[in-house]
Amino acid sequence: MAADDFDLDEWSNLGNILVRQGTLTDDQLKRLLREQAKRQKTLLGELAVELRMADAEDIERALETQRINRVPAPTDTLQRAQETFSRAFAKLDHQAERLTQKRKTVTGVLKIPFSPSDA
Image 1 (cartoon, one colour):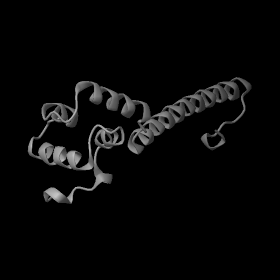
Image 2 (cartoon, helix red, strand yellow):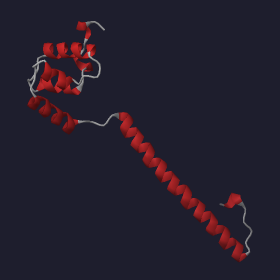
Image 3 (cartoon, rainbow, N blue to C red):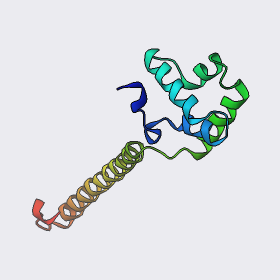
Image 4 (cartoon, helix red, strand yellow):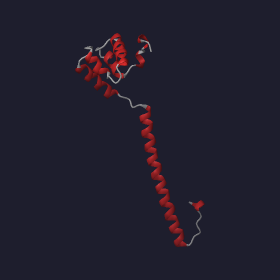
């Protein structure tokens, strides 16, 4: 990706927040992102402080804004829903098995014919 090919909509929330709160200009954010691309594993906030484009308080404020406004990623929400449904279905399966066992017991005591298709 060329240095000028960055799209504001593709930037991290932190970068957008820093621009919205007036800490960075769009051009400064582009510069930070270009520099960050060169330095793998460097956090945007740390780089902004290192290059003196922001101070620690600016970054803390932006991170707090990001934390407050964070929307769960769709995959996180989907995974939690799948786990909830899996637990619910496991519980229902367990209850169905217990009811089947009780029915077998009752039919055995009463000498009523029982077939698995009746379960």
